[in-house]
Amino acid sequence: MALSLLRGVELVAQGGIVVYPTETLWGVGGAALDPRAYARVLAAKGIREPRPVPVLASGKEIVSEYVLPVPGLNVLVERFWPGGLTLVLPPSSRHLEHLLGAGGGIALRVSAHPVAQALAVAAGGLLLSTSANLTGQPPPQRLEEVAPELLAGTDGAVEWAGSGAGVPSTLLIYDAAWRVGRIGSVPIAALRSALAEAGEALLGEGQ
Image (cartoon, rainbow, N blue to C red; front, side):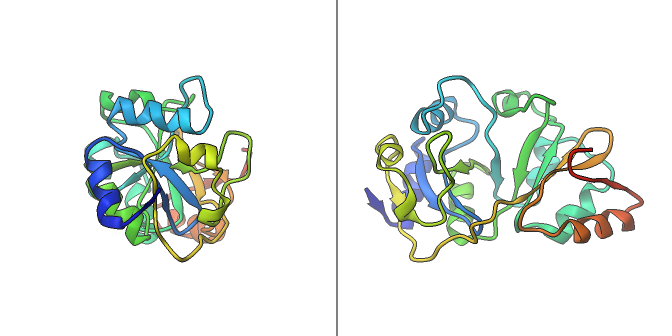
């Protein structure tokens, strides 16, 4: 079902889940703190076991509300959000336990895309943001690439004429030190330079 942005916002605010565009890839999500929305997102992707899901925050202020302060965080947030940088950070709230990865962190970013931003606000500040593909399938750059089976498990897709960059966000993980979890749309050299300004090092991918 094709949705206007206004209808997509209404559905997410009411606990629904929608397919939506970001500046990187098309995603599927709903309110991150709603267990029903979380369960529906996993089911739509064909995932049967609990699994951590990345989250889009409505703004930079969410960092102080839901995660612990770590060295170098402020410079990364100020320099690269909104944008294609996902940070895996230690949570400060028990409400996020269902979203935590094996290392105990939550994956967060602030999107620069107006649709994703509006939906994150409607979700109460935290929007589930996993790629809108069936598990094991390539993530979609355009709405036309989203599998009908996935769409059928949602409340519809927000209409958007453009396409994502086709490159996932860059992923940085903090666990006593910063390390690269995935190379993506933000250059590693820029991240290394920013952290150096804060007196922090960046370990390479796989280290």
